Length: 344
Image 1: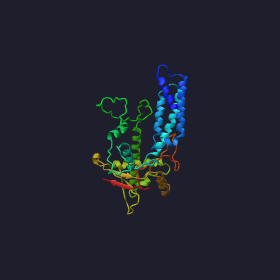
Image 2: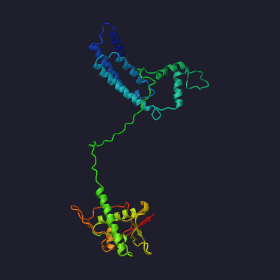
Image 3: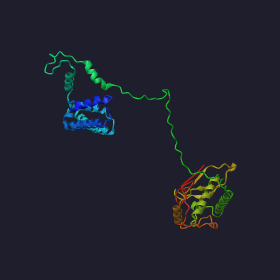
Image 4: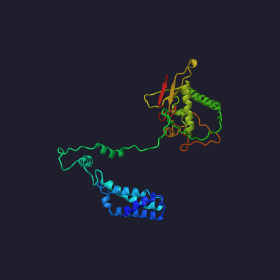
């Protein structure tokens, strides 16, 4: 038989007369591999049954032949056979488990264990009549190989008392354009502006004095004094000039008449002795829309402060072409009059 011939070849190979590199020996080895492979393909259904040991026996035969494999041609046929057996093993494993075709209950498992490891156990007898006992030695030796610790290379974990490094938080640096050279800003001379403001306050004070001397019963109303229908910017300057005069105590306001909405009049007060001036607040609206409405209500009345010619090179400001934007600041209030007056 083929097995007897193979054993004869094995014996000859171990003897000093037979050489394992002999072409005839290698040819016969490949022939044995092909015979096993053909047998495995022909009995597939028997090999993939979970309760059959045919697959394990075939693997043992393949391992016996593999001991004499030396060349690549024998390795190729050995690999083909092992691939087929591995596929059979995968199909067998799919039949196991809770959902597989070969699934069994715990009682079936105990029955099979007893059939393999209980001395004299006969499943036909009742448990009370069966006096056999479980051979724990045989049972333990058969399953102990499943719990062996594999041999692994040791690993060096380093010093045990090493402290963990704290993770540093990387602060994101903001990318900014490089700073240019340090330049001192040009200092402006405010002396001229102060002189112009003082001159405007003195001029307004003279106008109020002359009006009081000529007609003491009809002093200037606020809108008569600061109105300027030709220039919004000069109207704003007049309002600020009046507010500075009220703050210094030179001028003040009086309400004459019973109408609360009537525009107050401007009167001369004079600074108190010692130069201590009480706080006064003058609030008036200063936007372009209110200025136009005020001029329209007063029928384009020219104010007491005369219109000043613009500086050379500056564009004349006219209603509808004003680019100056003035919000509510120190001054603000009702159109055409004073909103709030507080004297202390």
